Amino acid sequence: MDQASPRDDQTGDLLSTLEVIEAQPLATRAEAYDALHDTLARRLEATPGSSS
Image (cartoon, helix red, strand yellow):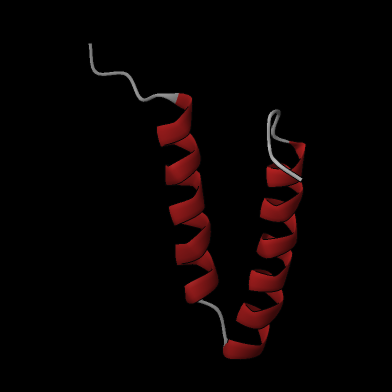
């Protein structure tokens, strides 16, 4: 069976998001990267077992 793991799906989603961001004009790209950073930081902080 060739099923993608949830981690693979998240990696694919991140790569797709990055491709969309890279296709945008520079000013829009900066805002999009800032929003992506905030989203990833929140997800990381919410991960069980993460060190403080």
